[in-house]
Length: 459
Image 1 (cartoon, rainbow, N blue to C red):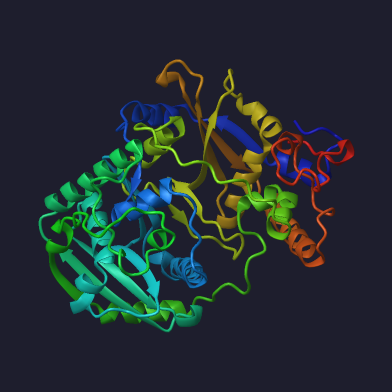
Image 2: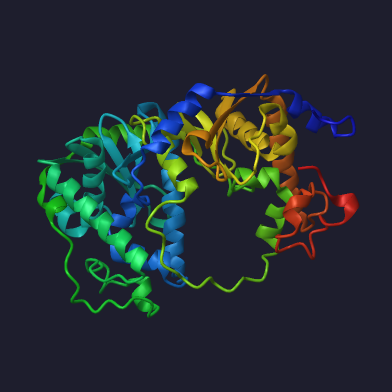
């Protein structure tokens, strides 16, 4: 229970939260947890080019060229814009998991739809030759969904502005060879990550076309590595232009305003710890030496197993919710239509629902902000206790109900405005200090002012 000395806004949001345990859902997640694949997750995007994915995960950091960084930012903005424009056509950012392979489908409408942006679009007849990675990604999504057709939306975005859109539907024949190739690539990438050597991975498609890892002398590609299997490209039955879809998308985009300005709040975490956000944005800490890359474990940790349990349900159970605000830029992922958080704990005792707001207020704040951004009045914290001796005793699902979202919306606005003002004025001291438990590991603790006794806040 909030103390009488807590600030009024703190009392207000705390009093609006009711926490209970969902024992039935916990049993369901526990059943999935116990029967998981035992495989480390491999994203479909890594399987488009496994060798490049290997170096990205185990190689030393590589600096992207400015134009490459700009293209990534444009792509992110286009995805957000398209998500807002087409949210009424189907679930966004749908998670699909099968045999340890994870797909994140941009839009699941009448067809699974992948969104791409760039400085040019490609004619359907040349799609396999000029954009084989796009076709393969779509093929793997179709294989994960057991759907024989998918859609590619290409956006022409010179200068970061959408100037044209091209829609094509790609149909595939028997998906069994696609699935076999997908799983073979996943198996090869897992083995390479465990061994620490990319031996056996197919040649990078970008070997001779400006691969940043080759340019930085990180990779050991020679150009004589085996080529990727052609089951995905060879399985294409037809590629059909869809001018009717193009017209519908253009119409939706015309009625969808883009963000007014770059967001001051990039993540919900910025609203929970605004002073830390100020330092991350304005006064970057001295960079730590990059960790020495080391091989990965062959099996997932408790967190990975919990994520698999959540994502291994029916298609559409985990997806992105449309948001009502331009800030933060972070997406809100939902489980069964409601925002959720995944956490692990090394506590020896399970958390009582009545103690959550006092012991871990950041969970309630995080969910409250996400619910305010999406108009949801309920969210979940799914927790796995790492010290539990048996899997059947490991999972708890805490359901948070919000009697009103007004305190969170108000706090959302005031903290956003305060962070924006502090960034403009170059002064962090007007922002709430971070909690005491964050201080010891904070790279800004020598300058932030949070460590002095009178400046510390409750968790």
